[in-house]
Length: 119
Image (cartoon, rainbow, N blue to C red):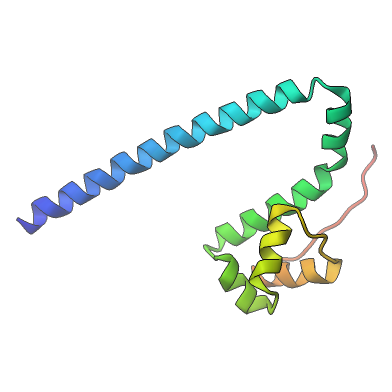
């Protein structure tokens, strides 16, 4: 009886994960289509491209934290940075100093690499 229940739970988890992946793909596709349409507007495109570096930093930070399977709260405890500040940085509504970014990178066992490239 316990084995049957375990199998049912495993099957339910499998179906749930498959459903979540399908929904995520739909959202990604809808976002990409919407973004592509908005990028046809030259004013929007210029602003979007101006923010590219900030988005790269935000995505790198979030991806590094998730790879370590860390919550914002866990990262805050390791770095000594308030969880609310980490949240604002990840949302793109805070402008962290290089010192803060180094602390965050260290908290996820990484270093920061900055380089200047040709435009």
